[in-house]
Image 1 (cartoon, one colour):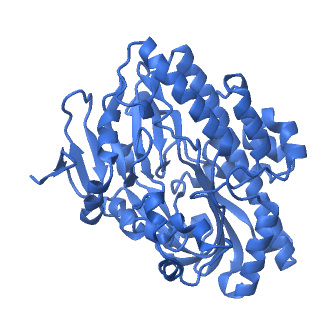
Image 2 (image 1 turned 120 degrees about the horizontal axis):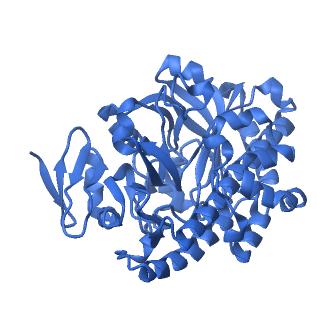
Image 3 (image 1 turned 180 degrees about the vertical axis):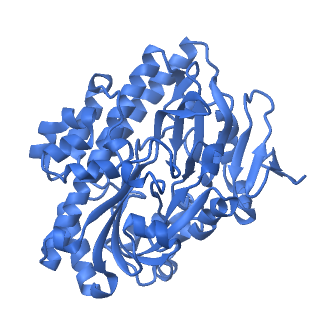
Length: 480
C-alpha cells in the first residue's frame, strides 16, 4: 500500500491517480484527490488539502469530499472541489465560490483557421472588445435592454435574453439545465447586488475570464467529435465568464449571513470560508434563492456575449452568421450548488471549479447528446491547449464531476514576477488584446498547471474520454 504524508495529512493510494485521506479527528467522511505523480508534488505548495479536510467536517456531507486534478487553494472549499450534502445537512456559500456559475461556452463554426490571417485575427479581437466590455467593474453596452429584463433574467435565465433578441430558442438545448436553475428569487438578493447586476450583464470581467478564438488542433475521438460538430482545422470560440459583480456581491453578503447562522444553529464550521447553514433554514433557503439568481444571470451573460462575438465576426468577415456556420456546442457551469440524484438519494452537490459531465444514457442529458454524453469543456491557459471531453459511467465515484480547467500553480502575486521575455515566450504566436503584458501577466501560461497532465489524470483513470484538443489563435482578456 502506497502512503505519502503531505502538509501533515496521510494520503493512501486508492487506485490509478486516486489518493484518499482517511477520515480522522472531526472529519465525517474521507477525502479523495485525483492526481498523478507530477501533480501530487504540487500539493505541498498550498493549503488545498487542509481545505478538503475541513469540508469533510460539515454536517450532512456524503463520502467522499473530492479534489479534482486542477485543485488549488481557494476561499473555503478549494478550487477544484466537489462536496455532496444530504437533505438534512448544510449549504455553504464558500463551497460554491464568489464567481457563482463561472462557466465555459464553446461555439463551433464552418470556418477554417488557415483562412484567418494575423491581420484578420487582430481585427476580430478589436471588434469583439468594441461590443463586449472587458475588465473589472465595466458596465454593459445593452443597458437599455438588460435593465428592463433584469428581473426576468434572474428568474428565467437564458430564455429571457432570447426573448429580448439574443440568440434563438434552439440554444437552450445546448446549455446545462437549459440555461435556468429553478428556485431563484430576487427578493433574497441585496439592493447592492441588484444594482451591480443591472449594470454588468453582457460584460466579460477580468482575472481568468476570456474570449478565445481557437483552432481545433486534434480530433481524439472521431465519432464523438462528429456528433459534436467538430473537425480538425476548424475555427471555434470559447467564452469563459460568470455572474460578475452580481454573483460576487451575493457571495460576500451570504458568507457573512451564513457564518452568523452557523453560530445560531450550533453548527461547527472549521473556517469562515466554509460558512454554512442548514439547507432547510431561513438563511439556507435564502442563499439558494440568491445563488440560483446568480446562476441564471451568468448563463444569460454568456448568451449575450456569444451574440456579440458573432456580430463581431459578421462585421470583420462581411458574412452573415448563417453562412459561417456558428452553432453552440455546449455551455457548462462551474461554481454551483444544485440538487441531483446520486445512488438513489437526492443530494445538494456543490461544485467549485468543477464541471458536471453526464455520460451517455444519463437521463439528464440534453436529447441531442443522450447517446454520447454531453461535452465537458476544459480550458487550459491562454497560451496552451483546451479540451473537449465526455464522462464515462465510472464517474459515479465523483458525482459525475470532472475538472474545470488546468488550475493555477502560482498565486497571482507570485505570477507578477514573470518577466516580459518569459511571458512572450510562453504565449508564442498567440495574439492577445492587452496593451501591456503587465495587465495580464498573472494569467500567463507559466502561472498554470500543465493542462495535458491535468486532463490525462482522469483519462488514465477511465472516467473521461478526450474528444478534441483546441489551441488558441487570439485571446481577449480584461485587466484586473
